[in-house]
Image 1 (spheres, rainbow, N blue to C red):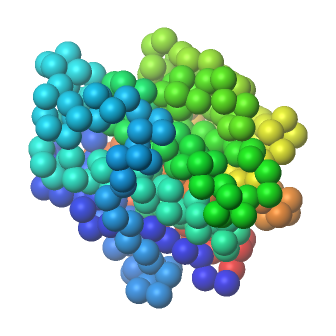
Image 2 (cartoon, rainbow, N blue to C red; image 1 turned 180 degrees about the horizontal axis):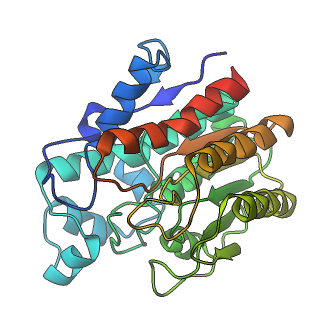
Length: 306
């Protein structure tokens, strides 16, 4: 089979090159996968702008309007961490729909990869940490809302988040929703300073290396699967766990990172679980090297599922 990929040219736009957030990585990731022969016209889909009805499943309508019309307070803008622009607004309203499309494709094909997503710090009524709309929460709630049409056998989803930072926004938005199980495997002493309560949180100490990390990820994933019995897995494959990531604090090698992707995907395939991947966090002044790290989850998806 061919692995479906989801992306949009608006994901990257003219953006301050010295800003910590590497906005160009989405374009570079797609170009890299094209060069590898993995992304083709036949398997690459482009999402449209998300409908307000979908976004409001996870977010406050008033907050969405403040963001769309550039009416956030200075404090809100500082917390968002990104300079508002029409281009930022446009890509922000497309990306959650990209994860929603990816989830639907995963239900159809067993695997699908979004070349963006993982904005897990966005809260119900506030942006945070470069995250404006929580695509994981939006897509999960959207899948459940449309479960009658998607032929979902049981309303149970797992969000397995391996970004180095805790998925605090995801945890807070979905708290109390028994249909969605949130599991975050993250560095204990990293952003956000105030952690939320996921259904399952696994904290790693700074400097954790490959062997301990991979054993922890496997154990956590198996426990999360056992507790949630999901019909679909959302996998946030953040690469900021990499040893040289400036915002990471863990000590995971490139080989360890690739092994993590294969581990999670092989377990999903072995258990017959559809999996939708998002790229999550990753930061590096060498944007091309960063794009290659983000590509690992797609490369391994092709090896495991194709």
